[in-house]
Amino acid sequence: MPPTSLQKMKNQRSKCAQIRNELAVLLARFQQDIQEHKRDIETLKLEKIEAEMTGTCWQRLQYIALLNAWKRRLVRMEEQVEHLNEMDLKCVTQLEEVEKVLLQYSTLDPEKQQTGEN
Image (cartoon, rainbow, N blue to C red; front, top):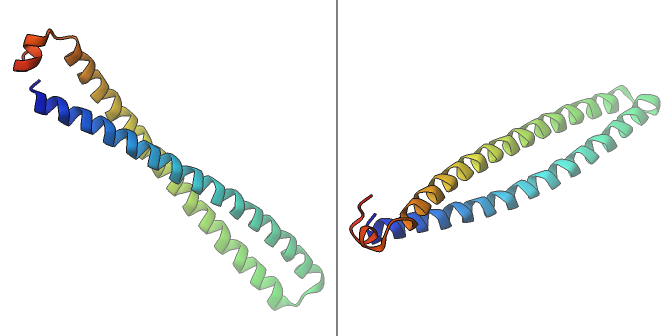
């Protein structure tokens, strides 16, 4: 592997590591948002129960509509987390491939490293 190819592989490894770090930050934010969203849904459920006991028909319908909207949003958030996890898995796979190539390269004798021969 010529030195330029080696540098490209090292750059690719760095990019993969950076992307994984960014994905980890995004996943943490999504997980936090999901937990907050679930708490909000529980609060809405309690308010809906109160509206069912003391409120008007309109108030009851409002809470049902709100709950349904919040539940749909929660499903979308969970789908986004799943997508981020898939992206992270692809990144891990690519990182492993790059590491494998770099390891193979490092086992070559210095003369072959210069020419890029196997």
